[in-house]
Length: 430
Image (cartoon, rainbow, N blue to C red):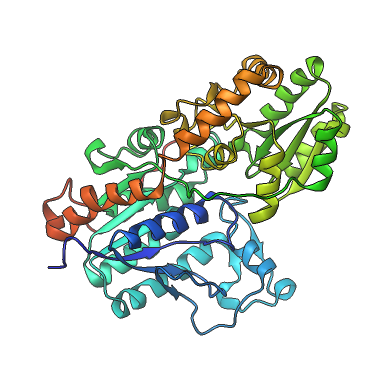
Protein backbone atom coordinates (compact mmCIF):
# COMPACT_ATOMS: atom_id res chain seq x y z
CA UNK A 1 0.00 0.00 0.00
CA UNK A 2 1.29 3.45 -0.91
CA UNK A 3 1.81 6.11 1.72
CA UNK A 4 -1.55 7.83 2.04
CA UNK A 5 0.12 11.16 2.66
CA UNK A 6 2.15 10.92 -0.56
CA UNK A 7 0.20 9.15 -3.31
CA UNK A 8 1.96 8.70 -6.64
CA UNK A 9 -0.10 9.98 -9.55
CA UNK A 10 0.20 9.12 -13.23
CA UNK A 11 -1.55 12.11 -14.81
CA UNK A 12 -2.58 12.15 -18.46
CA UNK A 13 -3.03 15.54 -20.13
CA UNK A 14 -3.33 16.83 -23.68
CA UNK A 15 -1.65 20.23 -23.42
CA UNK A 16 0.56 22.21 -21.07
CA UNK A 17 1.61 25.89 -21.13
CA UNK A 18 3.09 27.48 -23.10
CA UNK A 19 1.89 24.92 -25.65
CA UNK A 20 -1.81 25.25 -24.91
CA UNK A 21 -4.87 26.35 -26.82
CA UNK A 22 -7.00 27.28 -23.82
CA UNK A 23 -7.82 26.78 -20.17
CA UNK A 24 -7.31 23.01 -20.08
CA UNK A 25 -3.53 23.38 -20.15
CA UNK A 26 -3.61 26.21 -17.61
CA UNK A 27 -5.66 24.06 -15.24
CA UNK A 28 -3.29 21.11 -15.63
CA UNK A 29 -0.33 23.34 -14.86
CA UNK A 30 -1.88 24.92 -11.78
CA UNK A 31 -3.23 21.67 -10.36
CA UNK A 32 -0.06 19.66 -10.94
CA UNK A 33 2.05 22.33 -9.26
CA UNK A 34 -0.25 22.53 -6.24
CA UNK A 35 -0.42 18.74 -5.89
CA UNK A 36 3.33 18.28 -5.86
CA UNK A 37 3.76 21.11 -3.36
CA UNK A 38 1.37 19.13 -1.14
CA UNK A 39 3.60 16.06 -1.22
CA UNK A 40 2.18 14.18 -4.21
CA UNK A 41 4.65 12.34 -6.46
CA UNK A 42 3.40 13.22 -9.94
CA UNK A 43 4.33 12.07 -13.43
CA UNK A 44 2.66 14.13 -16.16
CA UNK A 45 2.08 12.45 -19.54
CA UNK A 46 1.58 14.32 -22.82
CA UNK A 47 0.85 12.85 -26.26
CA UNK A 48 3.65 14.63 -28.13
CA UNK A 49 7.20 15.53 -27.24
CA UNK A 50 7.64 19.26 -26.67
CA UNK A 51 10.47 21.43 -25.31
CA UNK A 52 8.95 21.91 -21.89
CA UNK A 53 9.96 21.48 -18.29
CA UNK A 54 8.42 22.14 -14.90
CA UNK A 55 10.58 21.73 -11.84
CA UNK A 56 7.75 20.29 -9.78
CA UNK A 57 7.02 17.14 -11.83
CA UNK A 58 8.41 14.58 -14.25
CA UNK A 59 7.21 14.67 -17.88
CA UNK A 60 6.70 11.65 -20.11
CA UNK A 61 5.83 11.92 -23.81
CA UNK A 62 3.86 9.23 -25.60
CA UNK A 63 5.87 9.71 -28.81
CA UNK A 64 9.19 9.87 -26.98
CA UNK A 65 11.26 8.66 -29.92
CA UNK A 66 10.13 11.33 -32.41
CA UNK A 67 11.72 14.71 -33.02
CA UNK A 68 10.58 17.87 -31.27
CA UNK A 69 7.76 19.74 -32.98
CA UNK A 70 7.69 23.46 -33.64
CA UNK A 71 5.47 25.88 -31.71
CA UNK A 72 3.08 26.37 -34.64
CA UNK A 73 2.73 22.65 -35.26
CA UNK A 74 2.21 21.94 -31.57
CA UNK A 75 -0.52 24.54 -31.14
CA UNK A 76 -2.33 23.02 -34.11
CA UNK A 77 -1.97 19.51 -32.71
CA UNK A 78 -3.14 20.48 -29.24
CA UNK A 79 -6.17 22.48 -30.37
CA UNK A 80 -8.57 19.89 -28.98
CA UNK A 81 -11.47 22.30 -28.66
CA UNK A 82 -11.14 24.14 -31.94
CA UNK A 83 -12.76 21.57 -34.22
CA UNK A 84 -13.67 17.91 -33.90
CA UNK A 85 -12.74 17.17 -37.50
CA UNK A 86 -9.42 19.03 -37.64
CA UNK A 87 -6.94 17.15 -39.83
CA UNK A 88 -3.21 17.67 -39.77
CA UNK A 89 -1.69 17.30 -43.22
CA UNK A 90 1.65 15.49 -43.20
CA UNK A 91 3.03 17.46 -46.16
CA UNK A 92 1.92 20.81 -44.80
CA UNK A 93 3.55 20.40 -41.40
CA UNK A 94 6.16 17.76 -42.10
CA UNK A 95 4.86 15.61 -39.25
CA UNK A 96 5.50 11.88 -38.90
CA UNK A 97 2.53 9.75 -39.89
CA UNK A 98 2.17 8.52 -36.33
CA UNK A 99 0.84 11.90 -35.22
CA UNK A 100 -1.00 12.93 -38.37
CA UNK A 101 -4.70 12.41 -39.03
CA UNK A 102 -7.82 13.66 -37.34
CA UNK A 103 -8.26 14.33 -33.65
CA UNK A 104 -10.03 11.06 -32.83
CA UNK A 105 -7.20 9.09 -34.45
CA UNK A 106 -4.61 10.98 -32.41
CA UNK A 107 -6.58 10.28 -29.22
CA UNK A 108 -6.58 6.56 -30.06
CA UNK A 109 -2.86 6.64 -30.86
CA UNK A 110 -2.23 8.22 -27.44
CA UNK A 111 -4.14 5.39 -25.78
CA UNK A 112 -2.04 2.75 -27.55
CA UNK A 113 1.08 4.08 -25.80
CA UNK A 114 -0.54 4.52 -22.39
CA UNK A 115 -0.19 0.91 -21.32
CA UNK A 116 3.57 0.91 -21.84
CA UNK A 117 3.84 4.21 -19.97
CA UNK A 118 1.85 2.75 -17.06
CA UNK A 119 4.22 -0.23 -16.90
CA UNK A 120 7.33 1.94 -16.81
CA UNK A 121 6.20 4.63 -14.35
CA UNK A 122 5.39 3.85 -10.73
CA UNK A 123 1.97 5.09 -9.63
CA UNK A 124 -0.88 4.33 -7.24
CA UNK A 125 -3.57 6.37 -9.03
CA UNK A 126 -4.26 7.36 -12.64
CA UNK A 127 -5.72 10.82 -13.28
CA UNK A 128 -6.93 11.76 -16.81
CA UNK A 129 -8.00 15.24 -17.95
CA UNK A 130 -10.95 15.55 -20.36
CA UNK A 131 -12.11 13.25 -23.16
CA UNK A 132 -8.87 13.53 -25.12
CA UNK A 133 -7.10 11.47 -22.44
CA UNK A 134 -9.86 9.14 -21.19
CA UNK A 135 -8.90 6.27 -23.55
CA UNK A 136 -5.29 6.62 -22.42
CA UNK A 137 -6.36 6.54 -18.78
CA UNK A 138 -8.47 3.45 -19.35
CA UNK A 139 -5.61 1.70 -21.15
CA UNK A 140 -3.25 2.51 -18.28
CA UNK A 141 -5.77 1.13 -15.78
CA UNK A 142 -6.11 -2.12 -17.72
CA UNK A 143 -2.35 -2.64 -17.51
CA UNK A 144 -1.60 -1.53 -13.94
CA UNK A 145 -4.91 -2.27 -12.24
CA UNK A 146 -4.74 1.06 -10.41
CA UNK A 147 -7.84 3.22 -9.84
CA UNK A 148 -8.74 5.80 -12.46
CA UNK A 149 -9.97 9.35 -11.87
CA UNK A 150 -11.31 11.27 -14.84
CA UNK A 151 -11.33 15.05 -14.54
CA UNK A 152 -14.09 16.80 -16.46
CA UNK A 153 -13.25 20.34 -17.55
CA UNK A 154 -15.98 20.35 -20.21
CA UNK A 155 -18.44 17.91 -21.75
CA UNK A 156 -19.38 17.53 -25.39
CA UNK A 157 -22.68 19.25 -24.54
CA UNK A 158 -20.72 22.32 -23.40
CA UNK A 159 -18.47 22.44 -26.45
CA UNK A 160 -21.02 21.71 -29.16
CA UNK A 161 -24.47 22.44 -27.80
CA UNK A 162 -27.21 19.86 -27.30
CA UNK A 163 -28.17 19.75 -30.99
CA UNK A 164 -24.63 19.33 -32.38
CA UNK A 165 -23.15 16.64 -30.18
CA UNK A 166 -20.44 14.53 -31.82
CA UNK A 167 -21.48 10.93 -31.15
CA UNK A 168 -17.92 9.58 -31.23
CA UNK A 169 -16.77 12.03 -28.57
CA UNK A 170 -19.90 11.42 -26.52
CA UNK A 171 -19.13 7.69 -26.53
CA UNK A 172 -15.53 8.31 -25.46
CA UNK A 173 -16.76 10.48 -22.59
CA UNK A 174 -19.38 7.93 -21.55
CA UNK A 175 -16.86 5.10 -21.55
CA UNK A 176 -14.49 7.24 -19.52
CA UNK A 177 -17.19 7.99 -16.95
CA UNK A 178 -18.21 4.35 -16.67
CA UNK A 179 -14.68 2.98 -16.41
CA UNK A 180 -13.58 5.62 -13.88
CA UNK A 181 -13.50 4.79 -10.20
CA UNK A 182 -14.26 8.44 -9.46
CA UNK A 183 -15.12 11.51 -11.51
CA UNK A 184 -14.02 15.07 -10.76
CA UNK A 185 -16.23 17.88 -12.09
CA UNK A 186 -15.05 21.50 -12.04
CA UNK A 187 -18.47 22.80 -10.91
CA UNK A 188 -21.98 21.77 -9.87
CA UNK A 189 -23.05 22.91 -13.34
CA UNK A 190 -20.72 20.28 -14.84
CA UNK A 191 -21.70 17.60 -12.32
CA UNK A 192 -25.35 18.03 -13.29
CA UNK A 193 -24.45 17.57 -16.96
CA UNK A 194 -22.55 14.35 -16.18
CA UNK A 195 -25.39 12.94 -14.09
CA UNK A 196 -28.27 13.96 -16.36
CA UNK A 197 -26.79 13.65 -19.85
CA UNK A 198 -24.70 10.50 -19.28
CA UNK A 199 -26.84 8.77 -16.63
CA UNK A 200 -23.98 8.59 -14.13
CA UNK A 201 -24.80 8.04 -10.42
CA UNK A 202 -24.53 11.22 -8.36
CA UNK A 203 -22.30 9.57 -5.76
CA UNK A 204 -19.59 8.90 -8.32
CA UNK A 205 -19.02 12.60 -9.11
CA UNK A 206 -17.01 14.92 -6.85
CA UNK A 207 -16.97 18.70 -7.41
CA UNK A 208 -13.50 20.28 -7.13
CA UNK A 209 -13.37 23.91 -8.20
CA UNK A 210 -10.45 25.25 -10.19
CA UNK A 211 -8.05 27.81 -8.79
CA UNK A 212 -5.75 30.54 -9.96
CA UNK A 213 -2.10 31.40 -9.40
CA UNK A 214 -1.73 34.76 -7.74
CA UNK A 215 1.29 36.73 -8.88
CA UNK A 216 1.97 40.44 -8.60
CA UNK A 217 2.15 41.72 -12.17
CA UNK A 218 3.54 45.16 -12.87
CA UNK A 219 3.13 44.98 -16.63
CA UNK A 220 2.61 48.30 -18.36
CA UNK A 221 -0.35 49.03 -20.58
CA UNK A 222 0.21 48.17 -24.22
CA UNK A 223 0.99 51.33 -26.19
CA UNK A 224 -2.01 51.40 -28.54
CA UNK A 225 -4.51 50.69 -25.77
CA UNK A 226 -2.84 53.29 -23.60
CA UNK A 227 -3.44 55.85 -26.35
CA UNK A 228 -7.13 54.98 -26.42
CA UNK A 229 -7.38 55.34 -22.65
CA UNK A 230 -5.64 58.72 -22.69
CA UNK A 231 -8.27 59.92 -25.17
CA UNK A 232 -11.01 59.20 -22.63
CA UNK A 233 -12.19 55.86 -24.06
CA UNK A 234 -13.30 52.83 -22.08
CA UNK A 235 -12.28 49.26 -22.88
CA UNK A 236 -14.47 46.17 -22.49
CA UNK A 237 -12.66 42.87 -22.84
CA UNK A 238 -13.48 39.39 -24.14
CA UNK A 239 -10.84 36.67 -23.65
CA UNK A 240 -11.27 33.06 -24.70
CA UNK A 241 -11.83 30.66 -27.55
CA UNK A 242 -14.10 32.19 -30.15
CA UNK A 243 -16.52 29.29 -30.35
CA UNK A 244 -20.26 28.79 -29.96
CA UNK A 245 -19.77 27.76 -26.33
CA UNK A 246 -18.22 31.11 -25.37
CA UNK A 247 -21.09 33.27 -26.66
CA UNK A 248 -19.23 35.68 -29.00
CA UNK A 249 -22.49 36.54 -30.79
CA UNK A 250 -24.03 37.66 -27.50
CA UNK A 251 -20.94 39.75 -26.79
CA UNK A 252 -21.45 41.59 -30.09
CA UNK A 253 -25.14 42.24 -29.39
CA UNK A 254 -24.30 43.50 -25.91
CA UNK A 255 -21.58 45.76 -27.35
CA UNK A 256 -24.02 47.28 -29.81
CA UNK A 257 -26.38 48.25 -26.98
CA UNK A 258 -23.54 49.65 -24.87
CA UNK A 259 -22.32 51.80 -27.78
CA UNK A 260 -25.78 53.30 -28.24
CA UNK A 261 -25.37 54.90 -24.81
CA UNK A 262 -21.58 54.98 -24.33
CA UNK A 263 -20.06 55.61 -27.77
CA UNK A 264 -16.55 56.17 -26.38
CA UNK A 265 -16.12 52.46 -25.71
CA UNK A 266 -13.87 49.95 -27.46
CA UNK A 267 -14.33 46.19 -27.37
CA UNK A 268 -11.13 44.16 -27.33
CA UNK A 269 -11.29 40.49 -28.31
CA UNK A 270 -8.38 38.21 -27.42
CA UNK A 271 -8.68 34.67 -28.68
CA UNK A 272 -9.11 32.45 -31.70
CA UNK A 273 -11.45 29.68 -32.76
CA UNK A 274 -13.77 28.38 -35.44
CA UNK A 275 -16.16 31.33 -35.08
CA UNK A 276 -13.48 34.01 -35.33
CA UNK A 277 -14.07 34.76 -39.01
CA UNK A 278 -17.84 34.86 -38.52
CA UNK A 279 -17.48 37.16 -35.52
CA UNK A 280 -15.41 39.61 -37.57
CA UNK A 281 -17.96 39.49 -40.40
CA UNK A 282 -20.90 40.13 -38.04
CA UNK A 283 -19.07 43.08 -36.48
CA UNK A 284 -18.49 44.50 -39.97
CA UNK A 285 -22.10 43.96 -41.07
CA UNK A 286 -23.36 45.84 -38.02
CA UNK A 287 -21.02 48.76 -38.68
CA UNK A 288 -19.01 48.20 -35.49
CA UNK A 289 -15.58 47.53 -36.98
CA UNK A 290 -14.18 50.85 -35.79
CA UNK A 291 -15.08 49.92 -32.22
CA UNK A 292 -13.69 46.37 -32.14
CA UNK A 293 -10.04 45.35 -31.79
CA UNK A 294 -9.21 41.71 -32.55
CA UNK A 295 -5.88 40.79 -30.91
CA UNK A 296 -5.74 37.09 -31.75
CA UNK A 297 -4.59 34.51 -29.20
CA UNK A 298 -2.49 36.21 -26.52
CA UNK A 299 -0.60 34.76 -23.57
CA UNK A 300 1.84 35.84 -20.89
CA UNK A 301 2.97 39.46 -20.82
CA UNK A 302 0.88 40.49 -23.83
CA UNK A 303 -2.32 39.22 -22.23
CA UNK A 304 -1.37 40.82 -18.90
CA UNK A 305 -1.07 44.18 -20.66
CA UNK A 306 -4.55 43.83 -22.13
CA UNK A 307 -6.01 42.98 -18.71
CA UNK A 308 -4.34 46.06 -17.23
CA UNK A 309 -5.92 48.25 -19.90
CA UNK A 310 -9.47 46.92 -19.49
CA UNK A 311 -12.23 48.74 -17.61
CA UNK A 312 -14.52 45.71 -17.70
CA UNK A 313 -14.31 42.02 -18.54
CA UNK A 314 -17.31 40.11 -19.89
CA UNK A 315 -17.69 36.33 -20.21
CA UNK A 316 -21.07 35.63 -21.89
CA UNK A 317 -20.58 31.86 -22.15
CA UNK A 318 -23.56 29.80 -23.21
CA UNK A 319 -22.25 26.79 -21.30
CA UNK A 320 -19.09 27.16 -19.22
CA UNK A 321 -18.11 24.25 -16.94
CA UNK A 322 -15.90 26.56 -14.90
CA UNK A 323 -14.13 29.56 -16.48
CA UNK A 324 -10.62 30.51 -15.40
CA UNK A 325 -10.39 33.74 -17.38
CA UNK A 326 -12.57 35.84 -15.03
CA UNK A 327 -10.18 34.95 -12.19
CA UNK A 328 -7.26 36.20 -14.29
CA UNK A 329 -9.14 39.45 -14.87
CA UNK A 330 -9.90 39.85 -11.16
CA UNK A 331 -6.22 39.42 -10.31
CA UNK A 332 -5.58 42.45 -12.51
CA UNK A 333 -8.33 44.36 -10.66
CA UNK A 334 -10.70 44.30 -13.63
CA UNK A 335 -14.43 44.23 -12.77
CA UNK A 336 -16.02 41.11 -14.24
CA UNK A 337 -19.42 40.12 -15.59
CA UNK A 338 -19.96 36.38 -16.03
CA UNK A 339 -22.89 34.37 -17.33
CA UNK A 340 -25.03 32.57 -14.79
CA UNK A 341 -24.50 29.50 -16.97
CA UNK A 342 -20.86 29.27 -15.84
CA UNK A 343 -19.39 27.16 -13.07
CA UNK A 344 -17.26 30.00 -11.77
CA UNK A 345 -20.43 31.98 -10.98
CA UNK A 346 -21.10 29.42 -8.23
CA UNK A 347 -18.13 30.62 -6.18
CA UNK A 348 -17.82 34.33 -7.00
CA UNK A 349 -19.56 36.96 -4.88
CA UNK A 350 -17.66 40.04 -6.09
CA UNK A 351 -18.72 39.68 -9.70
CA UNK A 352 -21.70 40.77 -11.73
CA UNK A 353 -23.82 37.99 -13.23
CA UNK A 354 -26.33 37.77 -16.09
CA UNK A 355 -27.89 35.06 -18.19
CA UNK A 356 -25.96 34.81 -21.46
CA UNK A 357 -29.13 35.48 -23.46
CA UNK A 358 -30.13 38.60 -21.49
CA UNK A 359 -28.37 41.18 -23.66
CA UNK A 360 -30.18 44.12 -22.05
CA UNK A 361 -29.15 43.11 -18.54
CA UNK A 362 -25.54 42.61 -19.59
CA UNK A 363 -25.42 45.98 -21.33
CA UNK A 364 -26.98 47.75 -18.33
CA UNK A 365 -24.40 46.25 -15.98
CA UNK A 366 -21.47 47.09 -18.24
CA UNK A 367 -22.67 50.67 -18.58
CA UNK A 368 -23.11 50.95 -14.80
CA UNK A 369 -19.48 49.96 -14.25
CA UNK A 370 -18.21 52.29 -16.97
CA UNK A 371 -20.18 55.24 -15.60
CA UNK A 372 -19.89 54.79 -11.83
CA UNK A 373 -16.39 54.99 -10.43
CA UNK A 374 -17.40 53.79 -6.96
CA UNK A 375 -18.96 50.63 -8.36
CA UNK A 376 -15.91 49.97 -10.52
CA UNK A 377 -13.56 50.44 -7.55
CA UNK A 378 -15.68 48.20 -5.34
CA UNK A 379 -15.61 45.39 -7.88
CA UNK A 380 -11.92 45.92 -8.66
CA UNK A 381 -10.64 45.89 -5.09
CA UNK A 382 -13.15 43.37 -3.78
CA UNK A 383 -12.58 41.05 -6.71
CA UNK A 384 -8.83 41.03 -6.25
CA UNK A 385 -9.22 40.20 -2.55
CA UNK A 386 -11.76 37.46 -3.24
CA UNK A 387 -9.68 35.77 -5.92
CA UNK A 388 -6.77 35.43 -3.48
CA UNK A 389 -8.83 32.76 -1.71
CA UNK A 390 -9.49 30.78 -4.90
CA UNK A 391 -6.20 28.97 -5.38
CA UNK A 392 -4.99 25.63 -6.70
CA UNK A 393 -3.80 24.61 -3.26
CA UNK A 394 -7.42 24.31 -2.18
CA UNK A 395 -8.24 22.14 -5.19
CA UNK A 396 -5.19 19.96 -4.56
CA UNK A 397 -6.05 19.48 -0.88
CA UNK A 398 -9.62 18.52 -1.81
CA UNK A 399 -8.37 15.89 -4.25
CA UNK A 400 -5.85 14.47 -1.79
CA UNK A 401 -8.19 14.28 1.21
CA UNK A 402 -11.40 13.13 -0.45
CA UNK A 403 -10.23 11.11 -3.46
CA UNK A 404 -6.54 10.22 -3.66
CA UNK A 405 -6.22 8.93 -0.12
CA UNK A 406 -9.49 6.98 -0.29
CA UNK A 407 -8.59 5.40 -3.62
CA UNK A 408 -5.01 4.72 -2.62
CA UNK A 409 -6.17 3.04 0.59
CA UNK A 410 -8.85 0.72 -0.73
CA UNK A 411 -10.39 1.94 -3.94
CA UNK A 412 -12.56 -1.16 -4.34
CA UNK A 413 -14.71 0.10 -1.49
CA UNK A 414 -14.82 3.74 -2.60
CA UNK A 415 -18.06 5.12 -3.99
CA UNK A 416 -19.34 2.93 -6.80
CA UNK A 417 -17.52 0.27 -8.80
CA UNK A 418 -16.50 1.18 -12.32
CA UNK A 419 -17.88 -0.82 -15.22
CA UNK A 420 -16.24 -3.98 -16.36
CA UNK A 421 -15.32 -4.12 -20.02
CA UNK A 422 -17.34 -1.42 -21.77
CA UNK A 423 -18.59 -2.47 -25.18
CA UNK A 424 -20.27 0.73 -26.29
CA UNK A 425 -23.03 3.16 -25.49
CA UNK A 426 -26.55 3.64 -26.60
CA UNK A 427 -26.32 7.17 -27.93
CA UNK A 428 -29.46 9.24 -27.37
CA UNK A 429 -31.17 11.15 -30.15
CA UNK A 430 -29.53 14.57 -30.03
